[in-house]
Amino acid sequence: MLDQPQSGIFAISLDFELYWGVHDSRPNYSYRDNILGSRQAIPAILALFDQYQVHATWACVGLCFFESRRQLMEGLPDRRPAYRDARASTYSYLSEVGENEAEDPLHFGASLIRQMVATPGQEVGSHTFSHYYCLEPGQDAEDFRADLVAAKLAAERLGVELRSLVFPRNQTNEDYLRVCHEMGIIAYRGSPGFYRPQSKDEPSLLWRGLRLADNYLPLSDRSRQIGSAVPGLPLNVPASSFLRPYAPARASFDSLRLRRICSEMEKSAIEGRLYHLWWHPHNFGMHLQENLGFLELILKRYADLRSQRGMLSRNMAEIAQRYGITTPVGEHEPAHPLVGG
Figure 1: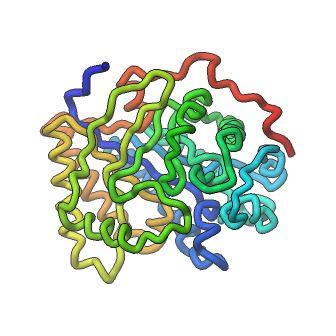
Figure 2 (figure 1 turned 180 degrees about the vertical axis):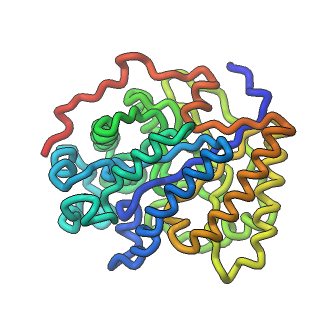
């Protein structure tokens, strides 16, 4: 077993999905303003990360990598999940896709991904190709494998090698981790306690209430210990907390929210543990300045802990490499026939 790092690690991962990630939960484009707002949020977040020397993983849905409808249609996998509930499939909404990013900023994101690639310390990872639900009835491991092949090929269009993965809706399927490894994935984001994997339509009122309260009150220990590396599997880089966006109705409690995050970061720095924040860029799509201001306070605290406690900022692939996990040469080459027009 590899020794645990002595310094605390501050990790950030963001789920970049545009409308592909909310198609089945936001009918009639009711979330349009948030999605469009993320196109201003992403450059601003990247600028803050660069200013404070923060490394992050941007887990991108593969369908966002394309620059035209023609490219997108050519990049679709021949094998697709046959979810029992057809609404869960992004393929059910292909008729809504426009011709290119200028015409359809809700579905295309290549220009934004290029900005991520160009910013130091940023990793572009995978959020699967189709925002794939790994626990939904009607799909299997071979469907998932085909999805990752398509994701890898889409990323290669922009010169990106996928090494980290975030399971959509936190639907981590332990049986699929070996497939991830075979496809060159060396790290994945495990779910925190109040974000247990859930079916898309599972009642979650209680869990939502607990998650909300946990942002302000110490209901759980959100600093994390990274487990041992397991041969043949990617490393679990467990999440600590979802960075809840600014809400005017809860603004008076933001000092409690900030104090909770900063105290957990300090504990992680002192004890040599991991603190892993995550959110979606579209969470910053509204109230952008308030969200950026809150994020900057967190990054300033990280800068203090880096100076005072030696805390390190690392993206998910860098954390896996720190634990000695690398991609086996030649082991993750996909079979291209799984993808076709």
